[in-house]
Image (cartoon, rainbow, N blue to C red; front, side):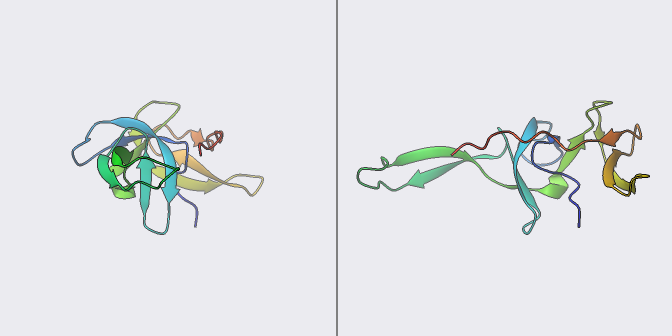
Length: 114
């Protein structure tokens, strides 16, 4: 099944402590129905030291947020919108904005950080 929100999409948070925050989807976790959004749902993690590799300490990281708590920002009208699917004349399945009826292209993949 096609995903309504994919990696690289611009989204807005609807619920929770980061309500109203905007960010790009860094990672999509479809099996858990969750996404990781840049700068949203920051948690602190206590990390054990590994000799010669990393130092012990408390690090801040982005935790996954449920996909129902975010909404796609349409790149054409700039508003939060629901996403629909339609089949083009060429037989290709595309996403579209339910507010302005414009086709939403897949975001250009960026190079993943290690």
